[in-house]
Length: 413
Image (cartoon, rainbow, N blue to C red; front, side, top):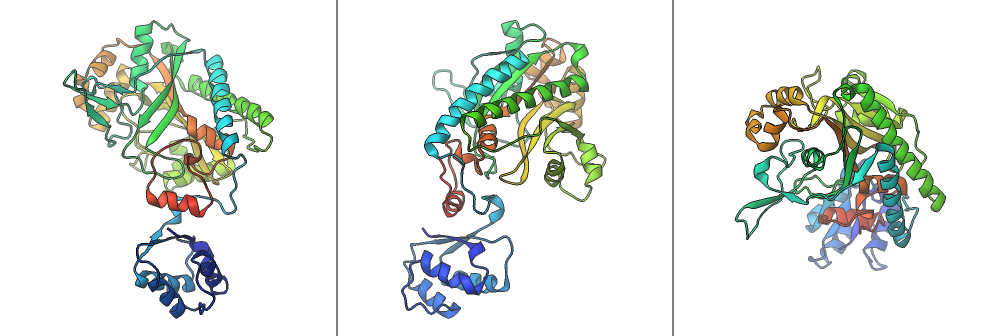
């Protein structure tokens, strides 16, 4: 299936030569729109042509697009979903990439666990839906559910382990100041796939027991700075091992609340605000996500039953390859009974109060904790300078994604 870069079809002077080369037109091709139509209609109709549309459509491109459309078997896809930078070439080949991913993960795990006093534990891939342990993230995602023959009940693949980790800390007897981390692997079937998102999620999930006097913004910020330091130290080690890598993060974290972002950029969308802010502050932490802002809208969705919306954060770096804000971690101080009560009421989720996890939390039977997730593939993308998450993880991709990657010369695993 031919894949054409629409950016090379905007000017008459170069478009016909590009088409002739890519579609193997004969030497007698007349290099005009009528001749193009004749060539297209003489091709095998089963050979669909995909055109990745340009950033800006010229008048000539619009005329050319009509010819392709009239010919009847061309598929146009938006460039917005596929941020492959012009001239992008990965710093590492496939073999080097696989070696680097392994080293990166081992290095970061050791650095993070030592810095936060965490012990590695085993974690579930699926849970019983009736327990309320699974997280619904933004409130609309559907879990992958399957029937278990022996029990006659269903299992649900986890969306995250935020609630499970809190139970584990209690059941395993972790004291204040110590915590756990684990590999969290999930399937998010409703994910909108793009450069940063796939239906397969891999992250380090961590959780740590804290005391009541640690439930404050200062402790949250200190933990964020510790995680950023672990990321920077891992990057240092990777650059020493692989000299072609060139990401150089700012080690100083710039903290900003979602309300301040809205006040600074009232005419921008939340994602555009993050892009604008991280362009100036390349290592940022966005605070207080989930509750409504003065505009009446939240900056982003958060489930009401794990993070305290007044004490949570996203760690975001500026990605120089994609030239945009790049979230590495979602984290926060978890809800205590008062915060859970408030957030269930505000979000209209009072029916969850009867679930086992929620009853225990409202009754004060679970430890106070702080925790979060750190994307394994996301961190690999950033440190290894990759343009698409499919370069560092194996997943399923739609035809448009595969066509765009092929056109950009990018190999998806």
